[in-house]
Image (cartoon, rainbow, N blue to C red; front, side, top):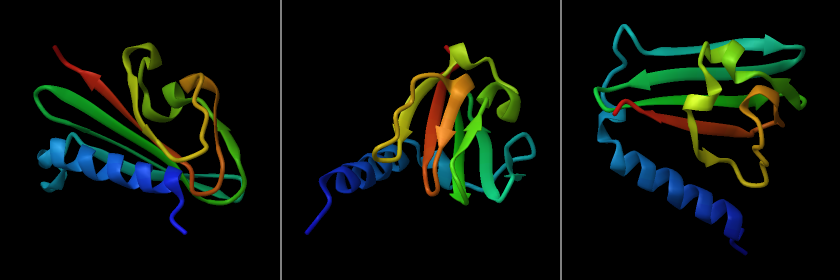
Length: 113
């Protein structure tokens, strides 16, 4: 049986990639992708940009749930960013107090206009 939430997430992610074809290009020197360890959890994060938009990603690739402040990890003003995609069953209320469980993540966007 197909999980409806996961199917919707997969479709939303695919549509996002098609709407942002520049993400398929190689990373530039000003782009960032890195990881940190929080206890036993591996948190990956990154930022990419073009002339119109910034995109950021934060995900818990393995380990227990962790509480994160995206302003610290990404060096951003969280009020300037919008949630584009979140993994199924992830409630996102505050980017400064984000709790990510194993295999959970979010994608953020910020317009430059």
